[in-house]
Length: 284
Image (tube, rainbow, N blue to C red; front, side, top):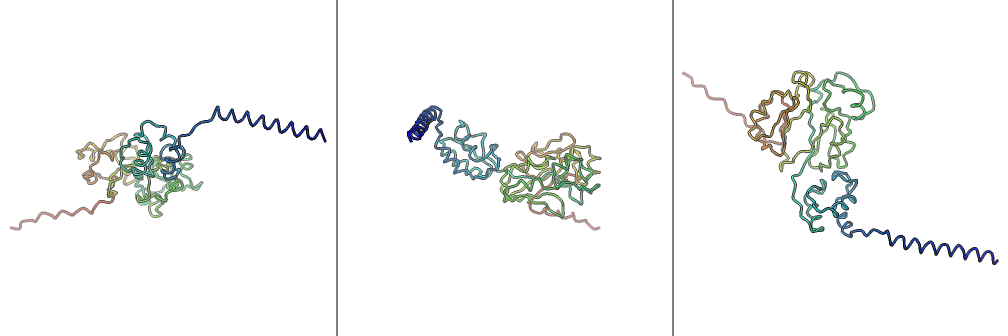
């Protein structure tokens, strides 16, 4: 009986001694967390989409609280409203940013870009892109497997069965950038969102020479520079046989769209152009 009591006493003593040591170690190495982190985290939308560049909203809240300057930090889901609230909590300032929206820069529909082969592998853009150039003559166009749709957490993307291309629901798009990262062809881009959701952009990423690109897709950009010549706002540049419109510089005058001979420049959500009346012919 004495052996049992002795054994129990020794174990209790070891436990108490260990607890005391652990207590002092914990006190010495403890990290005091800023209580504002929890407040900021609760303010964020908790989408954990990674659009801010951090692993999740909690990580972003910690980075915001520790940062001296918030100018390079932004929550695309919460937008300016959330960032203003965060700035007030932290006693810092933040400038409002133009809202962005995802845009699919490919107009290679089933009609414009005929299929030359048949892909019969796993339904994944990244796999198809790795295996070969695609089931059309364009090695740069959309593969249509829907990797972008799969990663969208906001139901903002869907594949149009008639065109074979993804479509963006601007009302649901938060510009988190998940679809941009998922596309192996770099077709999806975040562009400035106009108040009326109007857009003008070159819906092509094919950098091949004009004749080759046109042969693969009837609406391919051929790098003819006609759009560049009529733009008075320096919003268009031509690089690698491909035109690109800077959404921050574009004033949406729409001169470039009428000049494009292939129709690769799209204008979306604009009113229908008025048909100019033909000049009356004077009869003698």
